Image 1 (tube, rainbow, N blue to C red):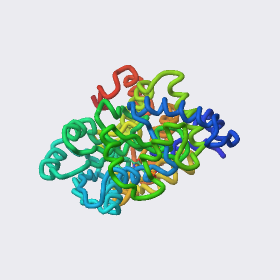
Image 2 (cartoon, protein in one colour):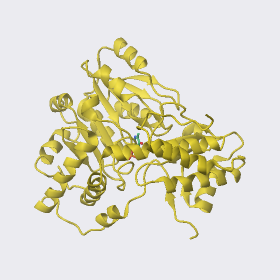
Image 3 (tube, helix red, strand yellow):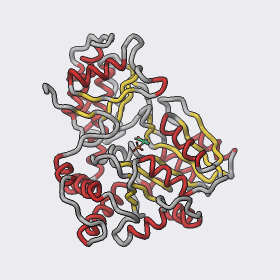
Image 4 (tube, helix red, strand yellow):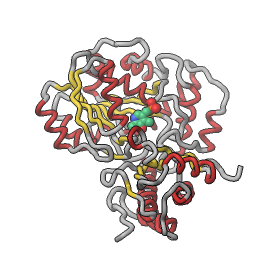
Length: 395
Ligand SMILES: *Cc1c(COP(=O)(O)O)cnc(C)c1O
């Protein structure tokens, strides 16, 4: 009871009080005017969030459900897709595509790196029968960010749909669907959006809708065309996740009543600079040195540091819950989440917990001023245009 628990993971993320209170409201009926009003108001804010004039469909499922709905709704068995696999979630695209019976061309990307547009261009040239490119905006397992805008420049001039898993990017770093030419952008409720898990959001471009309309529905539940037709009437296809939509209405209202997405992006960029600078000041190595995410930072632990113990000490002694590495990197990596309802003071607490737990699990750092250094990077970053200046504590 000594410490306030702080969830610094790449989802689920902490909830603002306004969202928690909204979630606690009594039930309203999903086919009556009160809900319809909330859903349509939410829809207007979701279009601003996604940067699209297209409808954004709420689906009752986790983020993987939306990935599944996209693959089944946009591609028919036997069609070819290019999958960018730079970690656990890229790998998941391949698994979902395989269950749909698609032919898969995989571009394997080393963990911690981003795919290059040249690699995608080459794959598109070698496979001019490919119908889609499936990728992450941010590969959350490594905290590397893929160059979606550049890939979209390649796909939008071809008859190839770009499907972008933005689960750890939408509401965290800029990813404007229409301006970039993304054909399917999807996310989940529990990462940047400050809402509990259980709901996914998905939007399709005009040409992706044409494709969805031409492909026979493969399953009864995920029928994007029927879902869209209901949404335009202010309803879901089945019983809507009423509380989650009420919660999402509250969280998006918090963003748009006091500003716009640029304020969120500025904050996310500054927190990223703060965590990266703090970790480097502790002589820790950043796992994704370039092309990094704005909502999670992956930190490679030196050999000799017991990563599982580090996570346990941070949680038990400091109240800070980090995520660890996955697969080979389990026990060798800390994934420090700074997305959603997280601010500089949470990150300050997180950096202290990181230093404390590092020392308690076999690591060492002589730094006494890592917190001041990190805070200075935060303030410097707030003053510049997001994405322009890469912090380097040693310069
Ligand atoms: C969290 C995450 C997922 C998985 O989402 P679930 O809600 O657990 O199904 C998929 N892709 C990315 C990029 C994620 O960050």
